[in-house]
Length: 223
Image 1 (spheres, rainbow, N blue to C red):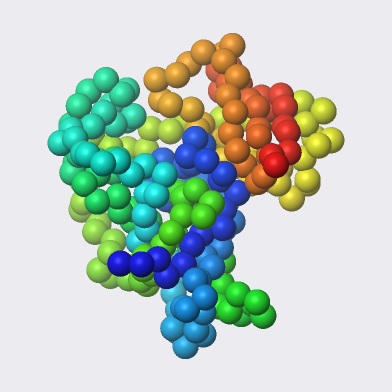
Image 2 (cartoon, rainbow, N blue to C red):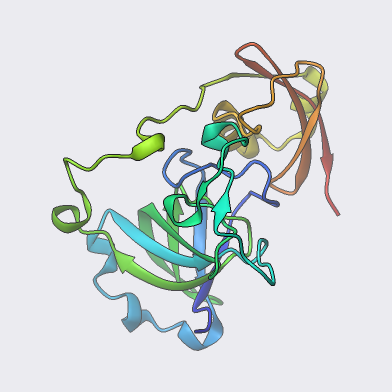
């Protein structure tokens, strides 16, 4: 297989990526590779509200694989079978995400571009295929979720230090707030003194969490 497209996303590294697609409604776009910039290939796609993206965990590839992994949902201490998780460390590093399709538009330089929301992917992630989401087939009302039955993520309040507000572009504040509100820290971290760094929108964002409040204390433009 070869990539047909890649994603353009404010998430600059693995840390901070939402744990599942659809959990944070940050805007992104799908840009096709030159040989696939054909408008006819996406004709009719605008009729669908959501799409499936099949993509590659290109930042998590390994030469070997393990039959068990330690999912963050279980605190990172309990092992379960790799095929019972969505861990990126798999025999084949393939990801699957359902995302909202905001629109399909034509760009003079890039051809057809898909504006989306809710992807759990790092900027530049290669995409192998795109398929429409079909509610009558893809939504299973009586499905069960095993040890991940309920979304366990906390929703944090987000506060920005005055010096950070002066640095960040205004259009970046809202998506960054949404990303931090989903609490990007590992589930087993709870140290209010720890300062985290997250690459987002071309900036290294420094933040800490105490209780239910995430405070952004610094932001530095990445080269």
